Image (cartoon, rainbow, N blue to C red; front, side):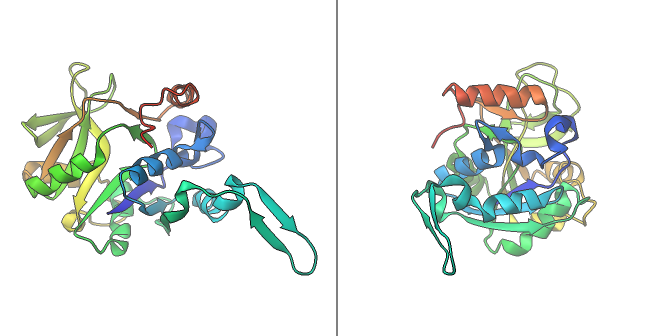
Length: 257
């Protein structure tokens, strides 16, 4: 399946890092968090990526254009007939990465809408460039295909400060501002979507998490794949440090590859 990753936001709550680079390029364990997210998808067999760029998108373009150069030992032959010889191979050689400029100020729904022209298949995957999980991705796809609705999101249980999902079984019926307790499910940001989601997206100012998801929920077209395990977004410097320490200690739950 195609994997759409939204990479264009400003990341204002992580200004210590995002003043100089886009949020998906903030490092965790020496690699951009975007790399960790893509490794997660690739581990489950999904290696065809569409990166929706915006703020400082050229940094992401440069990273992938020079990927082999930056991850390999190299020998250079100088002179009139220069040559480059790479001494390493890497697991990412079979990735296909489309770098799509979706605008500096485009909202999440607008970025997704622009990406749909690169998605010929009926179903595809979508996420953001700032969160990691150890959820069984292919199980969520099977769940989506079984219920036959337009959208599935992975519902997770963090400890925190997010808007709660109102659910009737696996069917999402609405949204609440804050969870009443830490066991409340929230939107984890990992989606399986049908291409008909485009009917719910009405332009660059469309915020996917508002009217489109609310409309899907009111119609009974949004299902929740419930994941009780690890999930963490990276909104703040403290969260970036926590993820970095987990990875460097060899205890990163999301490192399933």
